[in-house]
Amino acid sequence: MIAYNSRTNALALMEKQNYNKYIDYVEKGIPIDDEKLVEDLKRGGFLIEDNIDELELLRFNLWRARFDERNTQKNIFMSKEVQNKILEYIEK
Image (tube, rainbow, N blue to C red; front, side):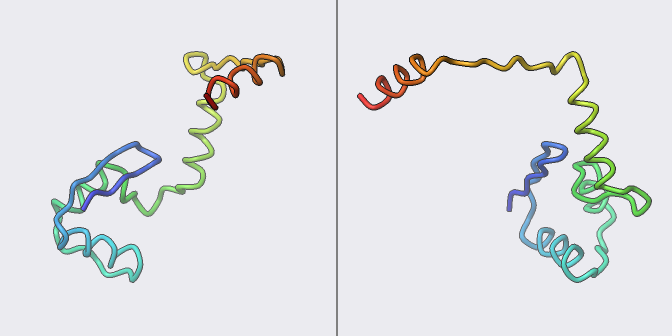
């Protein structure tokens, strides 16, 4: 099984048995009995510590990225004429 974490951009390749343990934990609260699996899931951000508010973490990262000068994006506005020309080209 392949799992993707959009917050950390991590990919995890898991054996079906480990994936089932993870899903059982997430959906039913059944503890994961494999410490290495737990540590790997934490490293990829699939599990987080109980004292971390994931929503606050997402908000923080959003605001940090919004004002980070290394991530500034420029909006490009195209005239209607340019938009129509692009559409004409694509439709050919």
